[in-house]
Length: 140
Image (tube, rainbow, N blue to C red; front, top):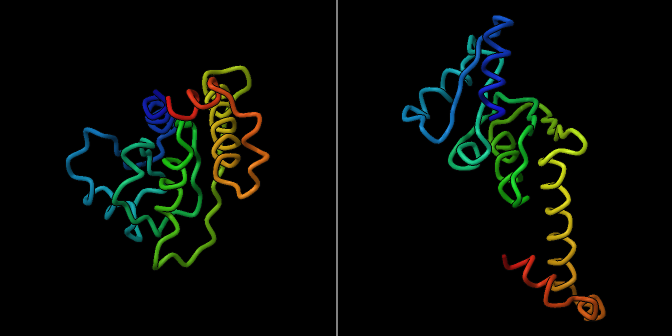
C-alpha cells in the first residue's frame, strides 16, 4: 500500500503529516489540522477516501501514486484541492513506474476512455470498430 510506504518515509525523514484512509473516523479534525497555518506540510490520503467530502484549499501539490481504474475517481480526488477559497495554483502529478500494475491500470483507463468517447461521440463511424470484447471491457 502506497500510503503505508509514504508514512514510513515521512517518519524516517521526520516530516510531520496528517493521514486519512477509509478507516479514519475523525476526518474533519485531520483536514482542519492540515488546513491550519501551523499545520503539517504533508497530507497522505487514500484515493478512495480522499475523493469524497474533503475541502483542501491549503493544498498546492497533489501527487497520485496509486491510480484507480476509474479516472473519474482520480479527478474527484484532485478536485478536492480546487475548491472555493483556494488562493494558490494547484499542480497535480501522476507518478507511475513503467511495467507495473499501476501502468497497466493507466492503459485500462485510456482504453475505457477511448471506447466511451467513441460511443458518446456524434460521429457514429467510431462505433463501427466496437465489438463484443470492447463492450465487455467498458461494462465490466
